Structures are given as structure tokens and as C-alpha cells.
Image (tube, rainbow, N blue to C red; front, side, top):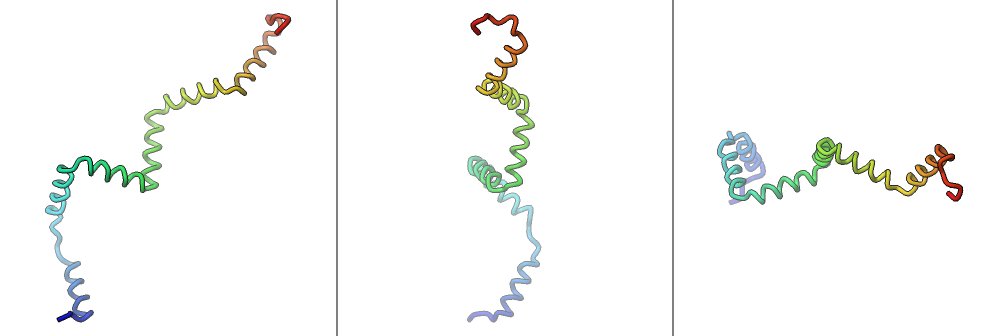
Length: 104
């Protein structure tokens, strides 16, 4: 026989008030994580990938860790840029006009 809606609502209220055994729940979670380390890693990756705050935090952390490497790379990229190279040549010619050969 089906329960009435009121009886079911009361049952759910009681169910939601039950004392949960969190220690047992945590133990189950830990066991699952110990058994499946690659699944845990995948879960963490997906959690970070789908969470904008975590994405920003990880980007900031990466920049903080590798700031020297990044700035060196950017400096080199700037130095190699054709417009900047032309500007350097122009500056050199202006500063050392007397040292340039007549054909330059």
C-alpha cells in the first residue's frame, strides 16, 4: 500500500534529521581513494578544470612559480621581433653614424 504524501514527507524529515556516521562515510571515501589513485587524480583534474576559481588560482600559482622563466621567454620573444630588431638597427645607426661605412 502506498504511503500518503504527508506520511512520506514526515518520513523524509525524520530521515534528514538522523545522526550521520561521518567517520564511517569518510573511511569509505578514503578506501575508495586508496584503491583508485588514478581515478582520484582524474577527479581532481576535472574538478579544477570545471571550477573557474580553481582555474584562476592554478594559473596564478603557475605564474608565481615560473615568473623568471616566463619573463625571460617574453624578453627573448621581444628581442627577436622584427619590428624591434629594425628599431634597434635604426637606433644604432643614429647613435654611431660616424662609425658606419659609407655604403651602409
